[in-house]
Length: 116
Length: 111
Image (cartoon, rainbow over all chains, first blue to last red; front, side, top):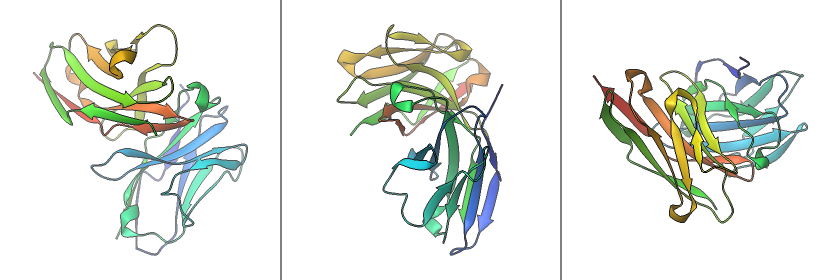
């Protein structure tokens, strides 16, 4: 069964460093997302991406964050200068068709980011 | 804005007992509702969803949920808990294409 994959599973970085979290969505999916979950808190939407551009972003997704689909398979989240409060589990998700019609979003296993 | 509330951050049941995980939502439009499960060290897996049509929705692993518009609820049930059901369960509502999640309910199953 096709699945969303994410690398790395864990990443430890120093405050101020850049990190890139990588995701391979399900191959025929067209819509892509990043969510995050700070320990003990809700899963929060960060950004959605379709047709090579951001569809929607949350207030969390400030200028320190960027997303890219560099080729036909990868979808990346970059944090330019990490802060302590960026420590969280980051989930990538994808859906085949327009999520506004109730389409299922399929989630990857997550990358746990720890900023020291 | 839509929101989701899950009553009870931890629920404990005995093996074979009924599982009931509560979810209430607020939405100004007909909602699309989802239940996801997260097993330890794994991602979020879809259990079931409601979009339109029949209000009683059946999902994987024997779970089902009923959409009750009058109560703005989408509670998750399973008649008989199994040890393998121990996990964290998330209710979510689709708001314009993004998912708004509840805080999650951790289910533990006692032998």
